[in-house]
Amino acid sequence: MVDMMTKDEDKTREQLLKGVQELRQCIAELEASHSQMSPDEEIVQIFRSSTPIGLFIVQDGKFKFVNENFRAVTAGGPEGLLDTESMNLVLPEDREMVRENAIKMLKGQSSTPYKYRIMTRTGQVRWLLEGVSSIQYQGKRAVLGHSMDITERELAQEKLEEAYEKERKTRQELEEEVQRRVEFTRALVHELKTPLTPIMSSSELLVSGLKEEPWLSVAMNIHRGAGNLNRRIDELLDLARGEIGMLRLKPVRVNILHLLRNVGDEMSVVASGNGQDLKSELPESLPTIWGDEDRLRQVVLNLLINATKFTPEGGTITLRARETNGSIIVEVQDTGRGIPEEEQSRLFVAYHRQLSDLEHLSGLGLGLALAKNLVELHGGKIWVKSHEGKGSTFSFSLPVASPGQKAEPRQIGVTEEEDHEGTRR
Image (cartoon, rainbow, N blue to C red; front, top):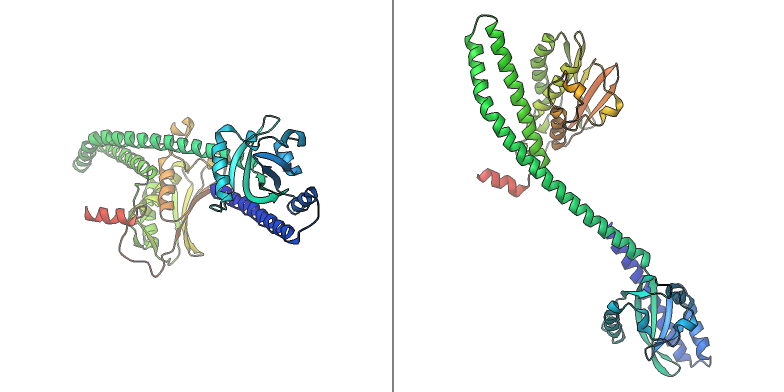
């Protein structure tokens, strides 16, 4: 937007300079021809060649002639401008600047029009873009001025600058708020991880050592709950890292088909335990992709876990993949209750879930938000198609690895300098 305003200003200056050149050429022709026309007729001839520009002649510091365009801009008739001091029209705070720029142009030290403010007879402040040149008028040296009204452009520029300043302050406040939230999240994660670590270790030891019921089931529930809480904490930390650009990936060539089969086999046991059927409709082969295998596994796992939560007992979950136009498309389809259209736009936003969801679902909606961040870091997209009562299909795309991509891992989301710095550490 600022660039557009600058281009408009350059265009206005070019128009004014072009008008100046035409006027000078016309004046030179008149002087060379020794025309017998009266001074007023000469002025009419000169001004007729540049009707879009406001023109005036100042001699001994006073207006001697103004054309209709200049009168219209200044809202002053002949009786209000002629034989009055030209500087009286200029705002006091701009007069010295106008005087200095006019002298530079008359001496040939500058050819760039200058802008300043005037006060019209109606009390309005207007912006003019002006240039001057020296002429002979009625046998005496005079100043020919040529100006354009640029008030609307200046007002638009002021509004743009105000909007930019407001946006800058808002952005700064948001960045500070995000930083505070990230710092709080880090502290929270640390406080939660510290007591959770011994719980996970102890529950794992109990599961491996207990053989009798109901103690084995109790120990397994504790271990499962601790594992779920640990994953939620990791998701929370990853989202915080993503908000400030610190979520980094180390990509290599990934056999996406092998990854999908492994995750599908792992989740089929979970689905079976819920009375659901998980089907894998995968092709015989797929091109490799360029990505972080652990993070991609996390995306697929989150989508499948999400599907098991919303699919009723006896329902079906289907994992699909295909290649389309240089991308791998992965789909997770369920036969759950579906998602209302007004809710779909908020699915990939963290903490979006309603209280009604929290009553029967674990988590705060972090999994889908994190999946979106990870997919986009890989250069892909994620989306959902859903109809109430007919289930949902979550899909994401990943670009196929190009033959020339290097096989060595490099972090995504950091600059080359940061990457080398991390390697040195």
